[in-house]
Amino acid sequence: MKFTRSKLSIPYIIYMILFVVLPLLVVCYYAFTGDDGNLTIDNFRSFFTNGKTLGTLFYSVVIALSTTLVCLILAYPTAYILAKGPFKRADVILVLFVMPMWINFTLRITALKEVLSMLEGNLAYHPFMNTVLCMTYDFLPFMIMPLYTSLSKLDDNVIEAAADLGAKPVQILVKIVIPMSMPGIISGVTMVFLPAMTNYVVLDMVYNSTFIMGSLIGSYFSSYDWHNGSMISVILLLLIIIISAISSKLSKEELDKPTVQGL
Image (cartoon, rainbow, N blue to C red; front, side, top):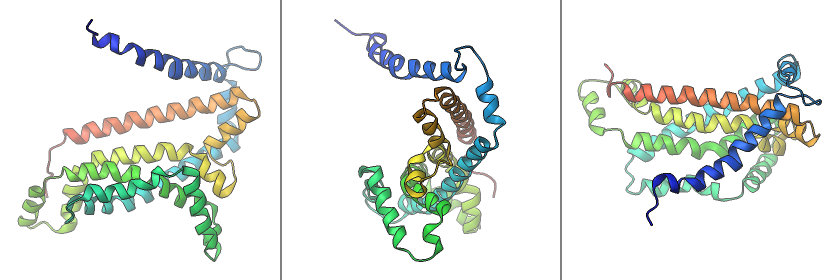
């Protein structure tokens, strides 16, 4: 008996319904209802009129943007050297950047926290910088991998032609290399920004604080306030959908552009 493609997809559809659709419907139900079970938007109104929750959202965005920027600054030259450097087995070196991810997340952050505690001065105890540093350490491979994939596909002949035409290294970087690697940049930024905005484990381990959206959700659910916890989850879900849609649109636009811009 031959299985059609539609029949082979049945287990996947069942899995998606049980573990994605139904939990999401439960979250949406609690987000749009009150303690009496009636539909309401008071949960969302209280969020956007509360200075504390808005401050938490702002701080989460700042943490995520800072982590993404630091990861991009560190990952781009690293990925470029791996992709265009004189390495015969660059893929093996790339694995070295991924290997720390094989170790348990909490163990890695605990080890880094101990290293920071050994440093002298106020810098070692700065919660914001420590949080960004730990998140950068955790998410850096997610930025390097898409950048490496994008830069490795860059045609060396285009760079050589630009140099032969008199373009300076800075011009080649700004007008050729960066635009042609933009899909990798967008993918890496998306892969770092979204989890960094909700990853409260690092902040709790480094700073023992709830000044981030993920830990705020956890505090609501731990106190059995499912309505506010679900409401914030829906807000984050909408933000993720919006950012993913924008990044997808930008990636498509960059792929549709001409290969080489005018120097």
